[in-house]
Image (cartoon, rainbow, N blue to C red; front, side, top):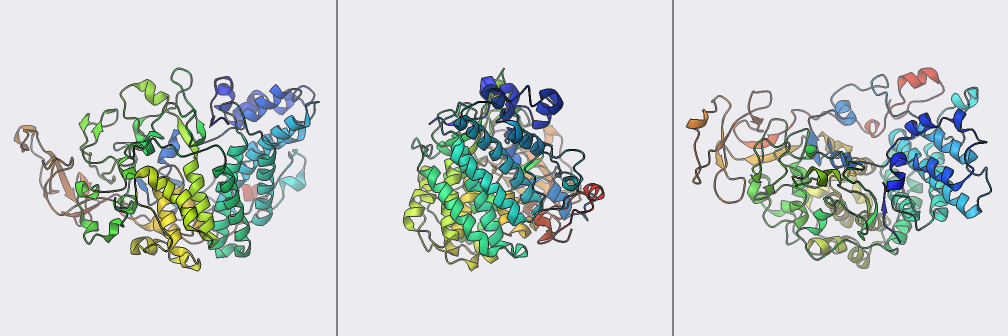
Length: 598
């Protein structure tokens, strides 16, 4: 079986284009049912235009969750601090992509191709339709279902109201099942195969099953188990396929290597990835995730990583007041491959004004002081960054889907843990998880509704493992949504802790690197700055409360944790788990309804 990357050379032009661009080049009127869909090449070209998978930007898509903060605007961040309405939230209600898919499904078999070939391409189109609708359901819950193209004079379809979530989701998983049953297992590099469809089926069945279980406003709790079984079985099928965790035995680098590779072809863990090559198709990577551009990791995520002996970080009496260097002592090795740690050497300095060498984090107002190295290309050669491959489907996620599904069903065994969570911990050199684990009060407080489960203690640790293993891969927002845990987003993301003014070591060599002074003081001229014992001038920062003109803000003015935002706002439940139908669309179609308080 071939592992799948998204951008093969022969398909480069089409896959890197979006649906709208493709249909602009080949509109329905010029394709003509009589002139197109006559050969397998025609079908391949059309299907390739449907590819719309995430890019390198998904490494910062955890921004504005409890994993990371951002100074940029995000939809939910704006909602929580404003008075959002259908007049202000206008994006998302777009259907051109669906029309293109349905147009294909109505015309792809106007030829004499073998039935197995036609079934393969129908499976691909239905896979993309399922993905399209899953995004819509996640955003709106109830949406109109269309499995045909709508003509401009079809008033009944144009003025249709939404279908119930249950009906639409049933159709979605009919599409996924057809795709799994008919898409070929072996495909060229860059093409969706059966295993990709199965992975998306597992991912979205877990989402739907847990969403129904924890969201009482849907009144669909009695159907949640069906989707949990589906996610369990789909994940299990993938676990029995030709994939395995990438593991060379180097606990300090194997995990991080997955996100800094210029060639993921043949990697046994990768089910699907975007492949880039300098001079042919650039990844558009730049070091936005490091330094102080918009996004910075949060202390809350850092504190979720276990100690190296398997104990909770929060089991330490003074864990909230540990200094930066102490925070990284004896931790899960995945932390050092996700966060820049004391003593880490910075090579790629493109957005880091202090230059290269041993890392001294640059502290700045509205940023946490932590920096992300997962997905960061620490190389000077631009060609390396341009060629960065992006893993989109990893076996690691599938293992976690299986473990979570089994625990949600109350059927998790130690053998299940050993082939899932503990396989991931083995790669990281971490102690195993066992059934009936000890409870971390901090983790327990995050999810007060989890105790409806018989295996809630196991679920707490599976959720921890998922957060750590999949950090900064774009899962956290949907995870909090499906677990009915959106109120966690109200907590202001925190940064480094400083017990007071004075000098601090940030590199772990016991030599001071920075000095904090009160906001009322002035930073001296260069010739008057203090030097450390190596003869290097200290970096000065003026600290104070939010809204002062300090270099960065501390929670108690002259001491405390770095604060990144004054007020995160309010997460209104269940309303903010959904989005309104834009008012402009209600004007066009008054039969559309608003739900959940919108």
